[in-house]
Image 1 (cartoon, rainbow, N blue to C red):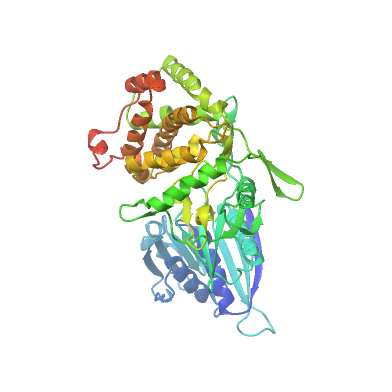
Image 2: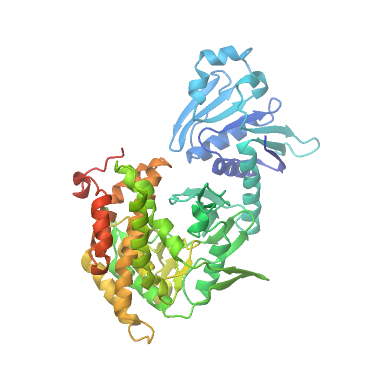
Length: 517
């Protein structure tokens, strides 16, 4: 079983509170922490600080469970169970009060765990606390030992703390931010008036092989670590665009401390709707970026470069086939015959040729409202803050324009979409190599490709990852797909979709509830 150990000396309660904060960032529902030490060593002090951090409430009343054996908390992040086994004589006493049910799926903190070793999870964090002879009475020595999954988590927590300290944000408060559909996690670090963003993007193991012995991520050219993000961030900033400055980086661990672009986005209201001025600035950024002669190789650090992959036919096809592998089953469609799948690939191969032949640009790949921030203190194109571009490729310029104007998560009025499209074309039409008809054809084809892919991704997020809330966007994406497939050059593809791809339920397409199946 994997394990890791970290010995720390904490000079005072403030340092203990910082350790509790780090632990709260690391732990998830279902994790167990076992606290050991002599009477008065500080087990309850650490437990109280940790519970308040998980609760996000510094004033939460946290009584000792010495006499009640167990205290339970229903917190925003999940249920928490705080137990003190000092007075028990056998594990039967704990089982009699329903320990297994209480602890299942909860954050679990156990003091005096040696009294009930049979109840301890193999994946857990052991913390032993002791006073330091000859030191001030506030000083504590702690040994943290992570077992199994929490052994890996503890090693990562230690690396994260090291990077935060190195970035000059050591004493900062840490708070979770809402993540995206990926495995990345984000935190805001706050130190007085200064803030930064911690990006936590551990290297992900390859998935199962799906074609020619390679996993989906390799075929679709998804980033394996944070190196592409660092390369693109520096490349964009060098060209005058607002990518986050990198305050500190641990490329090996996939940890970055980034400039904080604040809270102002490019949408407003409930439901969120585009702010026209900001969308215009965002499309101007794309026009300016695409007008440049962009290299495929970018420096990351001394003697370290990164080469952007091509958004090639193989990547485009594996993405669009997500529609077949996930969306069709989500809609209850029967298994697709091999001949129909082969025809689908042939039709898409023919449709994509024109786009793939265009002069490639940096395709940031997720250029839409969640990843665009508004920076009013800056001027011109720099007012648009760019996020989430680690999966960037060299590919067709229309792709990111479609990402912006046919946002999967918010409604962009068709009138505004056409105005933004005309604005982009107007800024590029004087370029000798820019063909308006070719770009507009590519816009429709990239729209159909992207919508097909996202239908598959959102169905996969529901079925595989247990995230049904993405399904509410499917009617919008379907509307985008229908409009793109109406392009005359896609007539054969449209006919294939009409036969083989079920639309969303009528009530969903009309704006009603989307069944999660």
